[in-house]
Image (cartoon, rainbow, N blue to C red; front, side, top):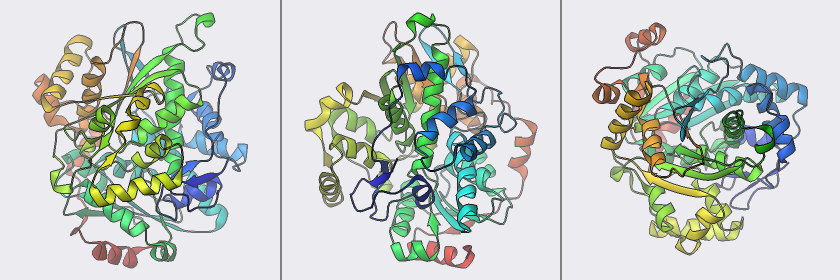
Length: 475
């Protein structure tokens, strides 16, 4: 298995190399040359595996060149039940005959980002130790990626983390999780701007090949393909668990639909790859909040990212994104994996602010299996309240966006699985608005809210961020 760039300017490279580099050297995103296929018989043979065992099988299809014994050790360490609050790692909880929740927030930071980041932390340390190298991680977060990365990489040998976050745009709990860390290899930088500004700074700096090489800059944002392939695992897991009760003779090809709350498009792109690999996913339903650029694209075929000042601050803040960093990977697929067409499309987007693929719109559902919808604050509140009243389950606002959109796409006889994104404790204000009380918070997490916080405030200025990296980067 080799990897290439969506923009065509990278020689086919092995997994270990793209694991460390993140962004392709030509500014594009790394994708596998081919998508591996898993037969129905092989898929069924994986039913009895625990989560780590399944991760070994799925990630192994992409991590060519990593010895099996090493990959097994990495996956066992990443998906150790001692690290997660549920022995299943990813519990699948049925709500009724139509809906189920896929529990992705049992990790140390109570968010789905832990599922990929725990593996990435193990894999990066392994790759760097093998080469005797160091790496300075530069990332941007709207809330959950940052804390998941920092908890996965804190104290890791040979790794330093520089995480940009938008000033005043994360929940109190998210800020406490990140800024209370005291590990010397963790550097939090609060940027005067929104998440898209932070993301743009990361891409600008990572796009400077000389600076990137001199300071060994790497990525853990969802642009890093190792995160994408680690997320594929739970789509396999979800289908296996959703069909456990189906008679064995009827399981093969039994379809499911999956709704994915989406901001940066990485999570749902992992679902697209799982579908390509052979998981019987009939429909991938993308759910957005009021920042509905991706929903508009799937409805019209026109991608019109908003300027930073137009991005709305909502009550599901981790999806307050108007320029999805993984979207280029999907456009590459729509353009039949043609780098020249991709470069032309992206040049037009940068020039005109619009990418028009309306001529391809029918393929989005028919060929790629996508549908979409958006949710408002009122929809979120109603979904949190209804889920609590009907099922006794409290969900966070991003999962509520997923549930609100999922209900519009239910079809009799096809189970709908909604990917849970975070624990409600991270967003107490909207939960209290919906059900009349704040969600309970474990004692060790309550202490975080009162802990001292350590963060460097910076302007939305590339030179200022570079100076911080130059000062504190590992040699």
